[in-house]
Image (cartoon, rainbow, N blue to C red; front, top):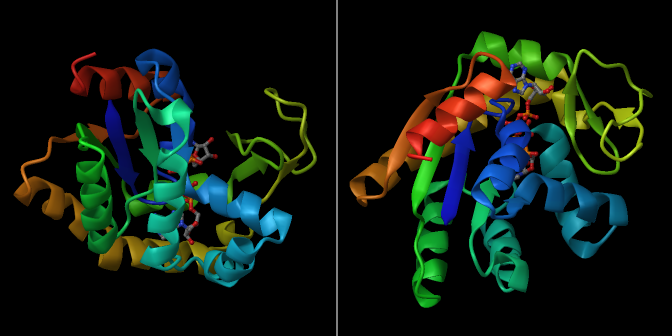
Length: 211
Ligand code: AP5
């Protein structure tokens, strides 16, 4: 299965991705995580992406499509993939569709998390993430220990108020039109209410996917 997770920054894509991966038996690919690892590693990709990411702007389409193309060659994605935040512009949706067509595959479903901006601002203002495995937490302090890997929790630079505003604007202007692109191209788009407990959102998502 090739599943695209779609939604505003802070909608819960990164929280739900590993839960859905466990239930659906396919691995996740989060472009934000790949980019942050590149920034930490000081690679060419990381240097290219760092400033955009810290300002809350989108990284160029060519960079994202390059990452996705490289990653999808890896054998762990042979059975499928849950793409977390990997499609945020119409050119990215088109590029991914062409790439998959070349592999004899297609997007099976787009799962869109629905949530309003006030809830997003509250979530992101209260988020810490593990510096090692990137697991997001809410209501935990910087320096607390990650339950999954023992790494230290940190704040993301793009979770400051200015960057949150920029990310929401980027979503409205560049990302929201992607849903219409998928609908007009006949792809399956399912929308789930992203407010409620993490477990409830997961149950709704699996139900919407018929699982
Ligand atoms: P990325 O890391 O993908 O950031 P994002 O899309 O802004 O999404 P977030 O990680 O902020 O939020 P999320 O939806 O995963 O929510 P989370 O589960 O953490 O990308 C970062 C940057 O990389 C981009 O800004 C861009 O620069 C670049 N980039 C990446 N992909 C790109 C692309 N395709 N094109 C161009 N540029 C790209 O949840 C948020 C908080 O809420 C957490 O604290 C969590 O614990 C909490 N929470 C989750 N679910 C619930 C719930 N049900 N109830 C209460 N709290 C909850």
